[in-house]
Image 1 (cartoon, rainbow, N blue to C red):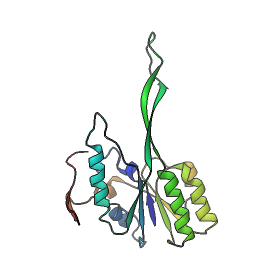
Image 2 (image 1 turned 90 degrees about the vertical axis):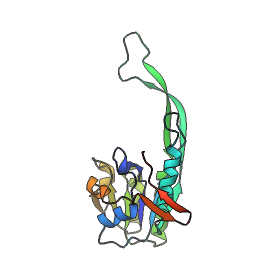
Image 3 (image 1 turned 120 degrees about the horizontal axis):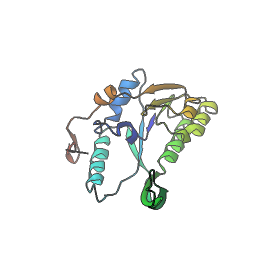
Image 4 (image 1 turned 180 degrees about the vertical axis):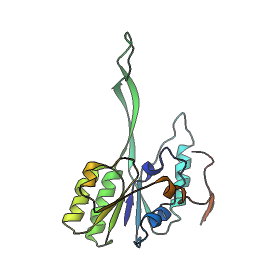
Amino acid sequence: MVSTSITVVYKDTPYKWLNIAKLCSLLLPNHNINRIRYFTALVRARPDDLQQPQRQQTYIRALKTISNLSVHYGHFLTNIKRLPLANPSKDGPRTVEVLYTEEKGSDVNLATYLIIDGINKDYDVAVVVSNDSDLVLPVKFVRDELKLPVGNLNPHPQRSRELAKVISFYKPIRKGALSASQFPPTIKDAQGIIWKPAEW
């Protein structure tokens, strides 16, 4: 099983049309990938990016062409927060109100399925595509209590020190692998043609 909250993998790269199954087969060539779970939350349109939900839905539709992939949804919460300015002026305000959006539920969902699938013997080896130290406890439980290895494909330049202590093996995700794992510009599903978004 591969569990992934994958958006962090391609952030700030041109590789957003990512075929997760192909990426996993490149990075895990000695493993038979039984299941891929993709964890995300549906975005809302923003004044500066009205098309973001449409692009996300197009990408999710492309992901659903992967036969052994399932999509699991958390949600976004947006609140007004007052935060300090990095460089306040001498006579100006020291704080500013911002719209603060955070994804909720995806890491909990990932941790839950990691344990449930392990208990149900749905995998011999689990692989988590994340660098989130919040996953330390469920990974440690799977490793120590279920006696199953948990690997880590890391989408960040730096590794989480806490996560590194409990994982069974590690591989970084490099740009070459991302580049080689893109969907073609058009994909066909039961509804018709899926076109890669012109811009992100």
